[in-house]
Image (cartoon, rainbow, N blue to C red):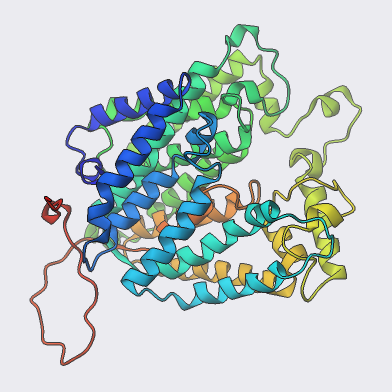
Length: 477
């Protein structure tokens, strides 16, 4: 099945199918469960066959983990695990590393940095579920750094991966649309509204809609086919922005703007020679329509909410408007600064080894019992100095991206996805698939396919070959 999703012969049909999948999830979880396992079982033959390219495996992984939020909304557990992406990523990364013998050395160092804090707990409260909740995300980022680093894909293959990630988010879009009450009956407040995010965590829903909007922008700019129709693509982009803004959770939508700006700046400062060499698109051709789509979505939602949306993005709360609170960085960040500072204070007291994985929420003096929303502060508090080393290596990957690709467009895309991945850890930690997936995508070696005449290697190991999707055949029993 993954082969047909990749080929994308009937793009509109696949878009409608995934929208209907989300609608069906409002009634029963079994349609989603059936589709999920159909994709897995019909794709097994492709991923276990001998191949020098991990393209099919990566595509399948990115598609399946993007069902995480929709499966939670549809309450598919235990058939589809509650934290689907974490378990699936861990298993598939280990399989991929063993099969393709990939060795991103920096990723192994990151993984080793996480081990000591798993072995002790200064709070004496942490349960096994707390360990999974806090540590499996960073473990997956490390494994992704091992497996994805410098894997070669063509630009068309890269576009296919992004498209596959958008499909399941279409299901989330239709689900939240159906579940959203009549907007005229909602009393909007200056805070995230769970009723406007399908009854689920607004921060995670907003993050996914923001991700989908960014990926759609990348697909449109590069003419990597999503629907094959510019109007349909624009309508889907508008819908993602509209629903994302309607959640009143700011993190995901700010991430979209951040990613788009990075890509546009990369194009803006490209030299004339590079513009001609790589046939870069003119910025104005996409900036003006893109700005109009986002602006119209913002104006419409702001009108629906009687101006509260604009106040929300200004960092206002009911307390600051009424004068009972002073607007500070802590109120603007919805308490995240207090959590961050509490974790930093814990690190100061336990500088070398930290307090143990999962223990910071029970030991910090501020917002005790509240889970960490900033992954950096959690790494410092729980893993100590090794947590800092982990984050510095992650930062090193970003620095390398500045010179990772001669094509300004591709370099801008890789850098944008990396920065959005890291930015997401500052408002949603590493609890979703967004950070490991985008880190992985940013570490790929992206370029156009070139045919070369084979040369004798004199016993040296050849670089992996890129296998076109047209050459992939499903074995017949």
